[in-house]
Length: 280
Image (cartoon, rainbow, N blue to C red; front, side, top):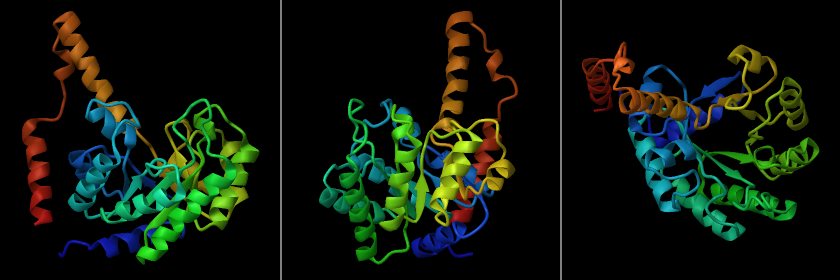
């Protein structure tokens, strides 16, 4: 069976947003991406924190070129769409955001997100007009490139001490009117908050970050009208947490009990050998 082209993956990703609800888990390297693909997930999303931590860096410390190389690696290794968490576009000025979006598209991703976080916790959100101009610049760059890349616009107030629902909705509506295909408020977590956002921006699809909205199942979230569910860096933290607990038990207690029941080297070798054979 031929490997799907980048255009194929972009068409599939766009169609996923038309109806229903799907989970878009966040791998942090090729191995985790291939395993998620093997489980039958229909699309994947990058995680800025998960990848940064795997390199020994805090979230946000990677350069633009580092993340672009990571996106290219994931998109080339997988047969399903990959959405890029492109943070703030690695630029403040809309002209520079547009240039960087074009570079992001060239990595082969099927979608990308741009957020309104400035990187400065003392003034975390770009002023409304600038935030909107950045979204318009990203949209124009995608259109000029002539691709079917799904564009997600994010407003980050709930993550950075500005949990103002009215302002979040004002921004999301403006971003949607400016051409964002999908809208996203990471940090909302209650049923009331989720349903309020979904209704306010309808018919635009909404992405929900499950790192905060605990206690709901996929069916629960689908019933609220959410179209796409992501997990951010949480799965990467699950893996890191297990590693850290095992390492601490060895260092502090001399205990290797954490090794009990883990997947064998032979099982992993078989999975990745089979995966490599399918990619040839």
